[in-house]
Image (cartoon, rainbow, N blue to C red):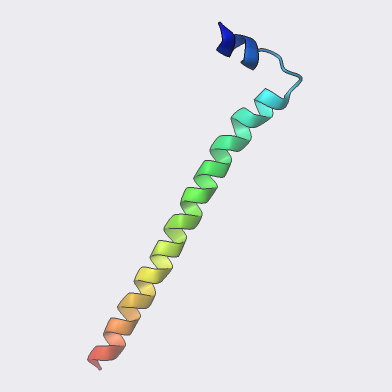
Amino acid sequence: MVITEVLAHQGGWDEIALVTVPVAVFGGLLALARRRAIKMAEAADDAANAQD
């Protein structure tokens, strides 16, 4: 199998990739969620200020 040959003992870079790629994905999703939450909070503040 080509996949097992690629992932089998490649000098350590494959193990590093197996850890860093998911961490980077979760970090990106967390940053995206944080930006959305900040925008939603700002919109709610603007709406509350407009009603006053």
